[in-house]
Every structure is written in structure tokens, then in C-alpha cells.
Length: 399
Image (cartoon, rainbow, N blue to C red; front, side):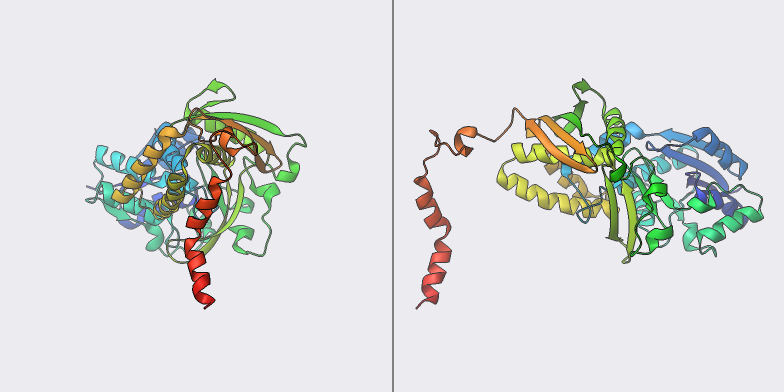
């Protein structure tokens, strides 16, 4: 009896090649698992393609709500941003894809799992750390690390030689990943850091800022415990808020990121990311935290955000440290409640007002007008004590 392999199947070039390759090299029975995390896709066509190329089964698992509520929103609350720019769209989806793949492997009695991540990328690490954490008994097959194919051009030739339709246009062969949170683009002109990205032909959900309307657009987002719960006065579930902000932000040229990043494997790579809704939510959430968190908590949470970004990027979602840091984040978010109004204009986001029942801003103290809670003369003693080490050092140096 042939060994069963559950393949994380996207219907893209890599996984389209992997199905016939697995059959030819190992005689495996392939169970294709399509994980819907909110990407735009014709799932019927993808399922038909998987079966036509040799899969014995193809399952489509819609886990978009789980992705938003259990992965994106915990990340949003943390403020995690990798290398000051990347909102972790691909990295946050991989642990859930690994979890879903494991679930289907067990349901269908598979002895192994497979993925289409390359031997140079981060995703191989994210997938496999997730599988190791959740199902260490499963064998992992990573074709890009064992086959003789060396490029996307060779993948295309492999399919053409077998009469299998190529699932992409040859003149639009960016390596892309998309979900409800973002779209990433790699390859082609992006492999030369000196070349400007061809935004006119590359971008899928965001217009170049110069093509955005000449009038500003306003949005208002309501947060409860750090989670967005309403948009422009209308209560909505998280998935719908992100979708609506993707449309609004995309039309205003929001959320385009051209990034040269440090991959986990040690090399630098370049990608362009479109994250319009995510950029708006991160900005709004950050503004509300500045209003509601005390200084010590806010400063320490920034350190936690940086560590969480490294953990998520590096594939350690299913780790005790990530869980512990997320528990700290959840504690801080009890105060992050209120409404944030933003102005969107040609790729830029501006604060247009915010309010919170947990606001720590007190006009009686902060105003230039002296109020009952603050006496200017109190600052004299504070400054002497605050700067005492400076004074002592200066006196010592002057001897």
C-alpha cells in the first residue's frame, strides 16, 4: 500500500509540480490540503487542478476567522513588527497552516506531510517547527531540498514536459503569498536592490500613492481590550473590518512596504508587501496605547513587541515563550479601549482624534495653564534629584 502524504497545497507553481514529482519519485498517495486564510482564490479550480495532476483527495479548509482571531489579533495587540517595517503577514499564517495540515494528516491516516517551501526561505522553518511541535511523529518531505529542480523556469519546463498547464503567466512570475492580512511579492526586478519596484504591474490590492485620490479619506475604529470591534460606527467581526480597511486603505495607497530583510537562514532578501488594512489597524492601535498605557508598561511592551516579532518571524509561534509573552500582552490590553479617527491621504496615515474611557491624559495637568494638580515650583526639587548623578560627576571632574 502506498504511503499517504498530506501536502500543503496552494495551487501555485511549486505545489503543482510537487504532486507529480511525489508520485514519480516515491509512489506516494497524495492528499492535497488547501488552507484558506483569506486569500483570493478559485477553490473549485484549485481542487480540480490538484486532482488532475495526481492527488487522490483534495480538501479545502476555511480557517480565515481562526486566522484573524487567534493569530492576527494577538499579533496586532502585541505591536510586533519585524525589522521596523514588516507586519508579518506570511509569518503569522504559517503556524495555522501547519496546524491545519497536521489535523488533516491525522484525519486521513497520512504518515507524512509535505510543503512547497524552498531551501532558502523562512517558510520551511515555520512549517516544520509547527509540525514538530504539534505532530513530531509525522515524516516531513521538503522537495525543494532534495529534487534536482533549481529554478522557477525549470519548474515550468517540468510541467510542460508532462502536459500539465502552468498555473501562472510567464511574464508575471513573481513569487507571491497572500491572505486576508497581506500580499507579498518576490522575484523578477526585486532581486536587484538598485531597481525600483514596478508597482504599476505588481500591486494587487493597493494603488501607487501618486494614483490615490486628491482628497483625504477618514476612518474611525473602535477597540475593546486592544481588538477592533467596530468600523465607522458599525459593529463588525474582525474579518470584515480587515476586508473593509483593505479596500479603503488600498484605494488610498496605504501599506506598501519595500523591504530588504534578514531571513532566518542568514541571507538578505527583498520583498514588497501590501498590507493596507493591517497598516491602518497597527497605526490606530498604537495611538490608543499611547493614550491609555502608563510609561513603564508602554516602554516594556515595546521590548516585548520586538521579541515577539523575532519569534513569529522565526517560526516559534508554538513555543512557551511566545505564549508567555502573549499573556503579558493580553494583560496590558485591558486598558486599550476607545475610538481612533484617522485621515488617509496618498499613502500616509494621520491621527485625526482619539478618545478612551481609560485615557491617562489629564488636561488639568498637561495644559500650559497652571491647574490645581501641578505647581511649576515642584519641578525644582525633582530636577535636582533627577540630575543628581550628573551634578556629582560634573563636580568630580572639575576638581
